[in-house]
Image 1: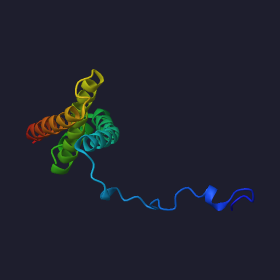
Image 2 (image 1 turned 180 degrees about the horizontal axis):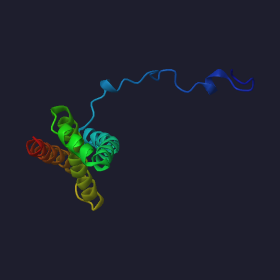
Image 3 (image 1 turned 90 degrees about the vertical axis):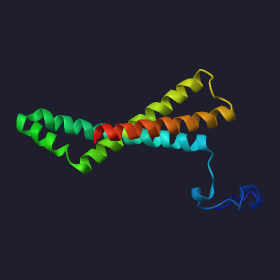
Length: 136
């Protein structure tokens, strides 16, 4: 309802705005994508810590439960989950170091942020692959 003392043109904001914004239509720059992944790995770590603490609790209950957890950790699916959590930790750590360097004024330009994003991806992929080789 439009108040009587206002005309319709004064209340209308912009009728040409999209109703549902489709994010797949946008092309994000590499630094923005690495920042989004950094936030996502933070969520993965939050959930992963709960999983790891539950596994720790089970392993500390008794000797039998420790042996059951040890046997369960040898399975492919559980190793894959642990590798996913470890991958999130490694990426989050590398991206966090990049953000710390940016706090000190390193890589604050557009070219520096693109280079930092590329270095973050390369270092993270290498560390994630090494972690997978170590885990399996």
